[in-house]
Amino acid sequence: MDITTVESLKEELLKENQIFRELAQKHQNYERRLTELAELTYPNEEELLEESVLKKKKLAVKDEMYAIINEYSNKVSH
Image (tube, rainbow, N blue to C red):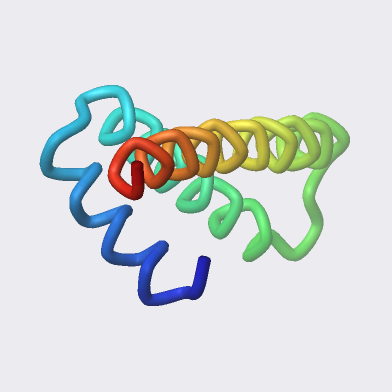
């Protein structure tokens, strides 16, 4: 699947699929917080741990989103 196909499927799923929208929102929230943490000059241990946990959660959400994209793509193409 090329990038334009993936992007168009994402747009379609954002309109039609509540679960996908919720996952996209979570992904954005994690990204926003990770940006805040990355801007800290001297993060403490708690913030470093939070950053590590958020990166894993963000990746898990992204994996779920791509699983939905693949599933939807297979339904559309068949």
